[in-house]
Length: 173
Image 1 (cartoon, rainbow, N blue to C red):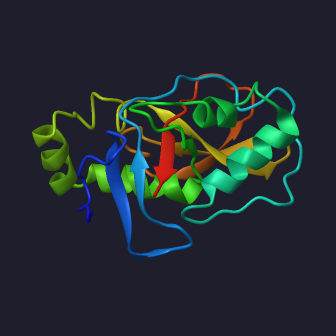
Image 2: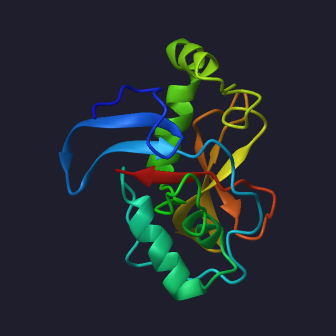
């Protein structure tokens, strides 16, 4: 099945990225319809020498965070998310969330989401929200991506125990 950006994916989320062909087991990125809650990134951050930062790399980072820091993490919230029989969700990389937020800002995407029954702004994608990413930046800080008007799509640093940032699960297929 071929999808277009803005289509509803097989798990009921929104297709926000298409790399053009299948490689390394995936072609599309889909974000969940809803956030999986908020909370701290973790309780005790540690350097992540194995971390990756590209599109599709959030899955690796999420499992790495879970293996190193346990289930009291934003990554675990995303990894344990399940909807419509799909449980392959993860906490995205900064690049994945930046791609999501920037695409959701486009007029074309807003129209497609509205037609599909989503409201990109009031539905939490571009409302007053900051998303955790799966990337540790060092010194007790983690990369976050703003969905806040005026800062939308910017990647900044946030303190690991801020507690108010959202977890928006992403999956690749």
